[in-house]
Amino acid sequence: MRLKLEKRPEPSRLMVVVTPIASVLLTMLIGVIVFDAIGINGQKAVTDIFLTPLLASYKWQDVAVKAAPLIIIALGLSIGNRANVWNIGAEGQYIIGALCAAGVGIAAGGAGGGFVITLMLLAGIFGGTAWASIPAVLRTRLSVNEILSSLMLTYVALQVLSYLVGGPWKDPNGRNFPATAPLTADQSLPLLFPGTTVHLGIAFALILPFVFWAVMARSVFGYQIRVVGSAPHAARHGGFDSKQTIWLAMLIGGGMAGLAGALEFTGSLKALNLGFPSGYGFTAIIVSFLGRLHPIGVLIAGIVLAVTYVGGQMAQTSVHIPNATAGIFQAMMLFFILASDVFIRYRLKIVWAPKAAPTMVARE
Image (cartoon, rainbow, N blue to C red; front, side):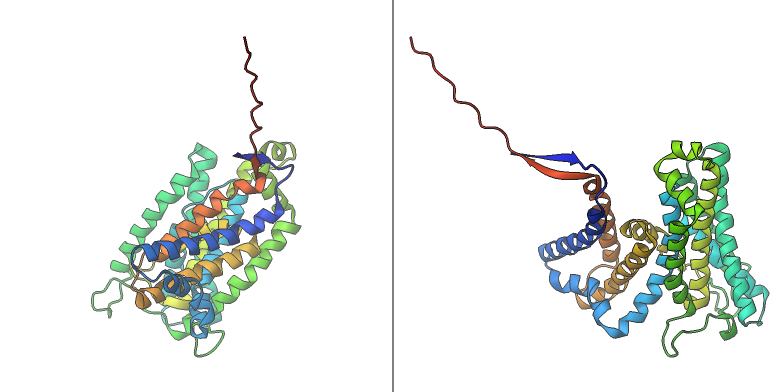
């Protein structure tokens, strides 16, 4: 008996849905086994990480706040991934978007209101788009791989953040702590539910997936992205410009990352400091693949990854696991989802070896 991968006549739609769910369940199972092996209550740890944030009503708002930037960034990245454009620098675009929003807030002084907040959000989108345009230029003009250029620009963005919050934008009343002055109440996003931390940015994260779904499924642009990504030679014959597609994919990804940074700044943090980068830009890559690059899938995957963030913090207190545990679970989910992609185009088949025919022994 041996196992053989047999190519399917066409990709399995069932496996597209089943494999992300199986990846999460397999991650949970391995988590239980590993924790038990090192002397930690594995069932308790995995329950706190994956289930308690959903079952405990007081944690829902934390999940919503964490999920919003992940969903928004992953939506932009999914556009590029569908077109085989790999923007790995969303974290840097997220940082620059927040810095541009902060710049508008500082320039406005004490002024606030809907107009100023709108300008801050637009500045965030512009900042993320401008930062993403650099690897787009390098790719289309000089054939520089956008994976490397966009990733390296993340570290440049970190240095820009460090310079501004520790220098020109440093809060004079902040006791020499490197951070900007906090936003006024009129410059902050309104809360959707008074008495909670659920701000208007979460509404963006709930609405945008349906906007992206309509664009990808019902527009010429969505068709162009799908064709360029799946059949670039056919796209050229169809009149679609690959360089234009690269530009659009990079700018949309950067704009969404910048918007997420601006929303996080104006809605949750209200000030920028050296701890502002939280890895959302990198985690959003996992969200996009776990959601199968589909806008509605990204919405669900963003919630799942946000649950691991909140649950990981809870498990640190309940079973005393390290802070990096949530990141380990996220990495395992990405590994399993990528490894299971093979079952979309191939099926596992058991091949039974034929029994050997009896040999006849000649007699003299």
